[in-house]
Image (spheres, one colour):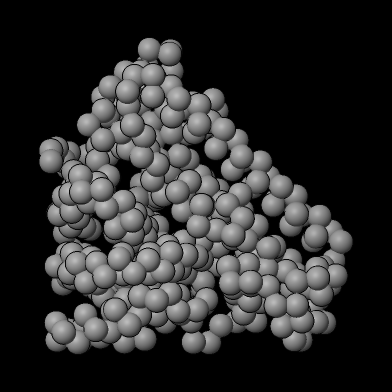
Length: 370
C-alpha cells in the first residue's frame, strides 16, 4: 500500500507507541523535515485521533528534531488529553458508586474500556462515556433524574445526561436495534454473551460492529484501527478466547460483516503488525469455502480513512448552510458511500438511503423492542 510521507511518519510513531519504540530505528524518515511538514504531521495526528499516542512513539532522536513551537502545541494537546481522561475516570468512579447504592451494575462500553489496552491509557482519546445498566436502564435514568439532572430520553438507543460536566450515554440497547436488522441479530448474540459471562467475546464483537457502523456512516480514523489492533492482540493472546473465534466469525459472516472485518484486518496488518487473528480467519474462509476479500478493498478503506479524512469539509462550512442545503450535501455524501454498503449486501444501500431520507423529512419513526 502506498502511504504518503506524512502517513508513513505518523504510522511509524503510532507503531512505536503500540509495539515499542526503537531508538534510532527511524533512519532518515524525520531528518530534514521543514516546519510545514512538522505542522502537517501534527495536524494529521489530531485528525486521526492519535495525537498523544503518536507522541509516545517519538524516540529521543525524533523529539530533538521537533521545532519548539510545534513541540509546545503537541505536548499541550497531550496534557489536555491526559487531564480529560483522568477527569472522566474520576467521574466514572463517582457514577459507579452512585448506581451501586441502588444495586445497579455498570458495564462500560467503547473508549473507557479500550483505553485500558493501551500502553498509556490516558493517551487514548475519549469522547463521552457509554454505559449499559443491563435490565436497569429506566431505574438508572430515575436515579439520575432524582438528583435534579436533566435526562434526555428522546433517543431510541440511549438516554443522555451530563454528570459532573461529562457527557454520559446510558444505553437502552447496545446497538441500533430500532432500525437495523443486522444490529438486532448481533444484539441478541451480545446479550447472550453477557448472560454466559463471556465478556471478552462481548467486547470483541461489540467493537467490531461499532467500528463497522462508524465506517458506513461518518467514516473511521486511525484511532479506530489502533483500538481494533490492540483488542485483537489482547483477545488472541488468550488461547481459550482464540478457540472461540470461529463462532464470532460465523456471527459476522451470517450478518454480512465478515468481508468488511477482514478488510480491516488487512489494513491493520499494513499499518501496525499482525494481531494473531489472521491464521484463524484464513482457516475459517477455507473451511467454509468463502472467497477471501482482496487487498483492493483494504486500499479503498485506506483512501476513506486517510485521504478522505484529510480533506473532510470543516463543520463550520456546513453550519453556514441552510437546512435544505445541508440535507442535499448529506444525500450527496451518502451516495458516495454505496461501495461500503455493497460489501455487506447488495440492496443494503438502497434501504439505508431511503431510511435516511425518511429521517430527514420525518417520514420514518421506528419503534422496535427486543
